[in-house]
Image (cartoon, rainbow, N blue to C red; front, side):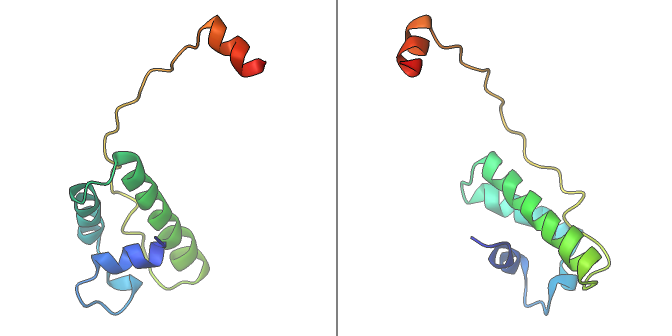
Amino acid sequence: MSAKRKRRRLRDRRDGPADITPGMAQRFKVLRLGEGKKPRTVTGNLGNLSIVYGHWWRDTCKLVSGNPFEDVQPPKDEKRPPRIISAEEEEKFLG
C-alpha cells in the first residue's frame, strides 16, 4: 500500500497533507495495530510516512511546515535472539 493511501486512512474529510495533526498520526499507529498488523509492519509504515512528510512535503515541496509523524514512537517489537545453526546445517548450506 502506498504512503499516499495510508495517509488517506488518517483523514476525516481533510483537504491535504497539511491537515494531518500529530494526534492523527498517533491514531494511525493505533488503528494499524488494531487491524492486526505486526509491529514491524507498523514501524515501516511510520518510517515511510515520516520520510514523505519530513523530506518531501516539508523540505523539498514546502507543502507542510512540520512532520506529524516525527514524534510517534514505533510500537514495541520483541527482538528474537539469533539462531545459531549447527555444524550439520552449515555444511548442508555451504554444500
